[in-house]
Image (tube, rainbow, N blue to C red; front, side, top):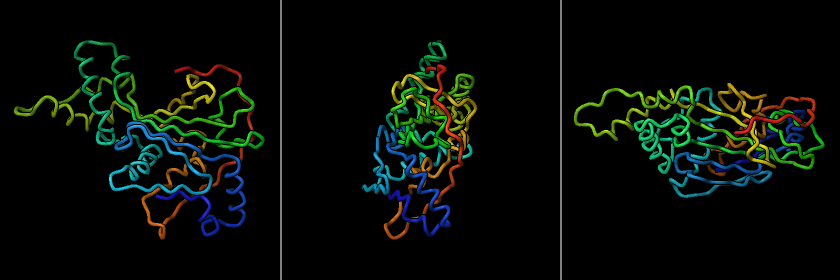
Length: 264
């Protein structure tokens, strides 16, 4: 797997585009990616180089999973997530949550028990330049900070979590556990959805949720060249790699906010 954001600029873009995208690379870049609970990636953190990052591994080591998790979060519909996308270590949490429901526990306890798929991006930016599409995610009050954190979750929703356990009647001869997991294939898309947060790097408990966002691309044109660069990662040989680049919109720099964000 190779992530290279400079190699194809000349062939894909005009001279003006190359200048703008090179400037965007200098202003902000994805520095770190953490993936939790997705397929083979139980809890994996990857540091990205400023130019190219090459990921090498044996079959079934998680290379394709890294590419696919970004495809899921940047897609048009969260229903593209499936039961099989939850890591093996996360799936037993569905049974634990069902037990809480059977015991009459509060919905909040059930939601806290259910598994999530989480991607956290750490971005670095130049404080002397315009934030552009990164502006909504810069929520800290530290003038010396140069980091922004974006957290994406595929998680249960309080309003729809009951649909997760509303399964059809079990057929004779089918074990209760098999019946439950089989039913999850239909009920997970009804009960789960994508949640998008800006996280204060100086105080991770301080977060802002983008209400109503259905995917990463929906928040303030977040699909800039650098922000979606992890989505360009694909299994490929050194002789064959391709990428797409998008022009980041120019927006005036916004002052750091002084209001208290919602804490989660």
